[in-house]
Image (cartoon, rainbow, N blue to C red; front, side, top):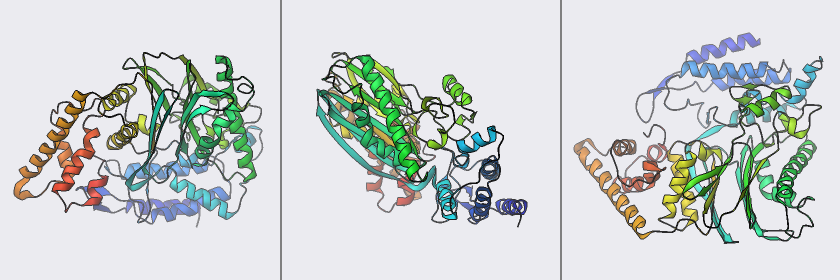
Length: 516
């Protein structure tokens, strides 16, 4: 069968996609489960015969267009067949275009032929599996959380991470109070947001700090470091660990193609050093306002776009070569092999931006580090206000971080979520009046849920979506700023579940889509 005939068959199957009613009512288009089986041989043939590097992206784009044309008004993602998971382009990586690495671009620029893809059919199969799983979603979010907390150097911190809707957990984090080389009064915190796998994120969380503190800018200083030495040492540490991971990856025959953003903060007794590489973000709250926040490294940023184009790449649909949604990251070695360019001149740069801020004992209140799964649904001021309101009702920083990730899930975040909260001595303290308001709000919401359910009468118990939408249409006093009603979803759901023991768990527990 020719490629054209196979594509024609795929079109026929796509046109015949059946429609079945969703659990929430209404017809929702469902993709014929056999459709991936038609695409599979095309992917394998395209890769194995090493067609022009543009054919594979075009094929993936064709498949995506087909879905858009078939399901333009779907409120839930198409079903790819039992036991499989949904695919969307919300990941940092667009799967179709990762198979156009730099060595192909280099060969084409030199006027030569594109080299044949190396590797066995098993390798091609693993890449197909990577294509299928990249950016995939579960049927229900995984809401189990990893927590930690600690204190020292006049700091308190708490953290929370949750897998959410993603098929894999690719985030990692670091929290260290007291650094080596005479830096006992220093601390380091970071969040790593992995993509296309968790290997780079995990390796960085274990080894990045060592690469920073072991280079010449930090060694032999007895804790007396200039601002320039700290900033240069951090930059050197990032470049060193990136090169180290490249060597490891090459020894594995290029098996690891993952990458990770990184956002961190290094605290000395006199300065705060914000570190950013990618689109995770950190902010400082000072005097109850956002005093500083890091800038996301997006391919569409003018300076980032200029570097990408100088390296022979392009920015399409706000992605590097139409694929990667960040312009700086650790790992991602497919984008770091342009001949004649240094490590900071590649399509994707591992160089962090480092910002120094003098500490203010009276005014500094807290720092937030979070991956884009948080920032996708909450703005800087929103999150700052929400954290402030939570710190007035509890001094448990793990609880505050858990409320952040839960609220972001209920606001519609589809990504992994990780957040680290670092509090200074001047952070907000628990206020009795705020605790009282919170208790009154919870009691009010419990009463309203009971009223909504009783109002239905003989019609039966309404679903949780109906309850939430009814509450969202009302003016409810004293909702947490920034979090609003979404931050009270757990309270509402607890009452609903108590009053409706025969609920459909699958529908109620995962119905964050279309909630509002």
